[in-house]
Image 1: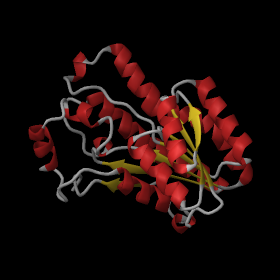
Image 2 (image 1 turned 180 degrees about the horizontal axis):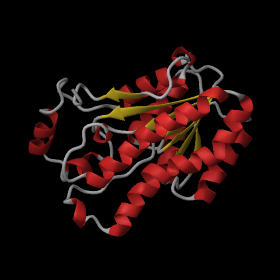
Image 3 (image 1 turned 45 degrees about the vertical axis):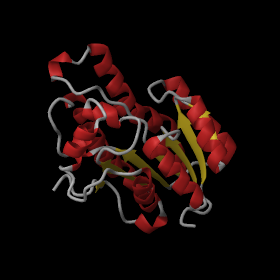
Length: 246
């Protein structure tokens, strides 16, 4: 029970990597809020695990404020924040991505980290403790063509993680990131353009371990970085990618 007595918020917790993190945190003894824009997905994972469901649009300040207030009301304090919610655009030349889609990608992938910080960092500072985990991507470390603005948003998240870590370290708050390769999540088809056996085979050929990241892989890595075992770890972007970035 490596997270016994801890409380956590996981955004995008209703499916994919987020759901894997929720399951692992619950299994390790944490009380968890699964926040998701899809209220049905949030309720489903809550019913399956005992987590608390919260409908949240992480790109909207009022919605994030409501999420933070609900978590503090339910738990009394928040030890762990996982910024997992994210979206992408379909593979296409950078100049063809519509402006409204560009804005949405950066609102969900980048502005959300700013908004959760606004509403939860003061609480963590006041307590002198906390762990924040940002879910980045190998796309932010080893970008590939035609996902340009998604790549850039995840590179932003990695830099944000490092600067947050430096600023918050004196307050006892650690900030890290995970960089998974694509996995069996709702975003897989978007990354590949279409989900076909041929596309999967081509994608998997670029991963030395020969498989996608799984929600369980992410849950395990997230559990370590958010536990007291990682008390000396801050500002890292841990690759959970089967060797793709080598």
